[in-house]
Image (cartoon, rainbow, N blue to C red; front, top):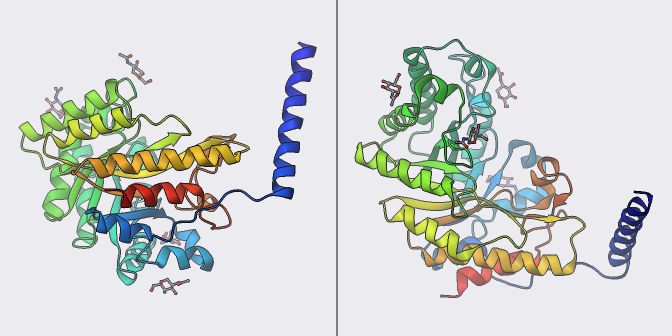
Length: 353
Ligand SMILES: *[C@@H]1O[C@H](CO)[C@@H](O)[C@H](O)[C@H]1NC(C)=O
Ligand SMILES: *[C@@H]1O[C@H](CO)[C@@H](O)[C@H](O)[C@H]1NC(C)=O
Ligand SMILES: *[C@@H]1O[C@H](CO)[C@@H](O)[C@H](O)[C@H]1NC(C)=O
Ligand SMILES: *[C@@H]1O[C@H](CO)[C@@H](O)[C@H](O)[C@H]1NC(C)=O
């Protein structure tokens, strides 16, 4: 016990020493590509390369200068300001201030929008999550929320994540207020309401851990099959793509995308990042470059994969360190807004065809 504690302490001291000396004597490798990523994505036949962003970040001029560049980013996803708790914090009280700011920025800088998201178990206000609903009253709550939000943004949203994260990893439906009250019928209730409010918007279901084979992708394939058979509007599946360094399977990712596109829906990489156990070494950053090239390369190989969105472009505003303690440096730009080798990986994937 004492020995192993001593060894662990020694190891962590060595890691600190290594990290310090590498910062002191050399700088981390950076990107060399001169390609702009949205321009490269479009030249390759994709619709966009985009980024998530969040309202508080828009006061950061250096951050915004890069985000504004249309050659670099052709699409935005609001990280928080279109979620239920932001849009309808009290029943029938709607607040579009934050969402409107991001839509205006997209319009002014020549980008399309992914709307994110309409029905999700999380960031759900208590009045919904803990309401005493019947199937009829909750149906009405979902229809009012979806209809009001989609109508407000009609014509301004390329694609909506109508349903977010409906499945457990074992492929069963997540038991939240929606499922517990309405079973899976809540999904078609929301999709039908969204379609009626903006018939031109692409309607998506967005989910994580669809990047690997297993019960979750099988359940999603079954759900899309059932929705299509019932004539419910469904246009795409968002494959979130929150990867862990070195855990990308190109063959499984491609097979899963193709299983979905074979059913007549698009797919998109909607929340891409690739987290590293800290401290990140130069070798880790090279592996991350390879991972990004592989992931974007799979989207390139699947014609129904319409675009790639990173879940924010810079480590400065990544959700990873707070959500996965001990991990970080998941994005293609570092926390000083300097392009990492991962940037070259993305550029290579978009330009090798
Ligand atoms: C980014 O674009 C918006 C919209 O055109 C503009 O208001 C803002 O000043 C720009 N910011 C920077 C830093 O370029
Ligand atoms: C609406 O949302 C904005 C942005 O989050 C917030 O600053 C504002 O206080 C909200 N308005 C109301 C009336 O709650
Ligand atoms: C599937 O996963 C959920 C969430 O972890 C769990 O509650 C449920 O019991 C699991 N069901 C089966 C059949 O394993
Ligand atoms: C699901 O819930 C709806 C609404 O209550 C109901 O009409 C339907 O019969 C249920 N379906 C199943 C399979 O339980």
